[in-house]
Image (cartoon, rainbow, N blue to C red; front, side, top):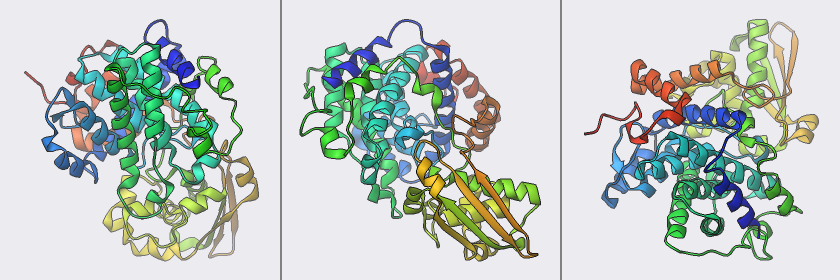
Length: 450
């Protein structure tokens, strides 16, 4: 049974040496997760979820960043949603999947609830990423026509991470993963409208993964062939011909943890290559919106489907608008948090430029996706020049990664306004040395506890 193969691998990571590439990749993902979750905790739906679940009881698991104590499942749900809401969390490109939001939220909640330290936490995170990224990748591309991989594969990854921390053996882990598979959900339609459902997918995945691990620990069983069975996950949610044994057997042969994408822009990842191309032309030619007569974006088809809103009115809609993010990039030189403030959304210069941005499918970019995300941008200037740039990949992808220093710059930009520089510095040091942290409830961002 395939769930059993994944389970055996996940359990094996509890002890023994970890490849440094995987361990360092995991530390980078922790830095990136806190960078997204700390400011995301103040954005809907996280505060609303905290109010809605206030009667769920308390525990040792803590909400980021204020340290409110709550039950382990509630913490996983709320922190998972917080990490995904700003569209700044990590990506495993080949699965079109944000593993960090659900996997790290689930692992942090269980580790805190059980008084576990950073080494166990890091190992659990790696297990969750390695299992779920493979499952997500195998199900593509057809799975992503209707299903949000962060909600589906994320549920399985969260269960693997939580199961490692619960001390499940291979049999118990098999049951945790099997039940996580049958709970896996999240529809594409949820983020083709202005709603709070998309971050809820990540939160639900984290919470459900924790639930399945706790249930397995108590003896609840699942169908071990639920991934590959004739009425199972793959049959129901993908049209691919999948060699599941080969997928599972690849665990440990290479480490997806070392090949993560870390976002350089606070918007939908399908827009990134276009934004990178606009920024390159802006820098090379000193362009301002007034210089642009027409801006044409050619990229892969799915980017147009998900992010083709020509007239966004809200921050959520703007993050899923190629037209808006390209206009904002040209006007301001970056697409970070400030690009989605009410003032920027109403900016007359950006609004005027929107009408001069057109988008279309670029054949080369479409053929290369999803393994490579590229875009071609052409700009006709008001003085008659024709400028062009092709971004063959995205800044932040494995071929063009953010350096550790660039990742830290992003982290400080997002966390310092919330935590202050001293606390942000202290937390960063803990995350880079997470294996030495004895008690995750005492991370620097949480108020001191008696």
